[in-house]
Image (cartoon, rainbow, N blue to C red):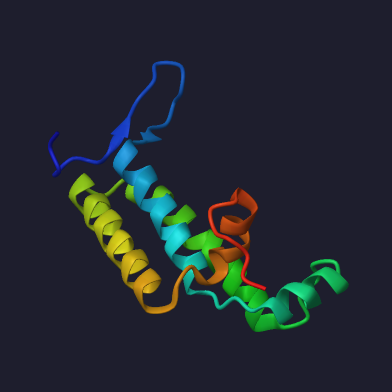
Length: 123
């Protein structure tokens, strides 16, 4: 694998390049990392259930939007950049997620982890 070339692969039927595995991993880990950075409290979960998911706070809505938008931009822009940059993005996001977990736990991923049954509920 040459890291000076973009991490893409091409299919004869598709007119545009498709993102490669390193680029996709970078975007997924970036999404996980950004979700971990959002704080989680049980009060917010109860409020979200009572308001049926509507977010009154503009800052919370923007943060949720950006946590999905940035990984998407990673894929879109990463198609034209060298795969070494995608590898850097992946390793940086992985390190960031690890440090975030060590400092403050799962954060905003706690409801997802609880749904999967990986954590025991502490009541």
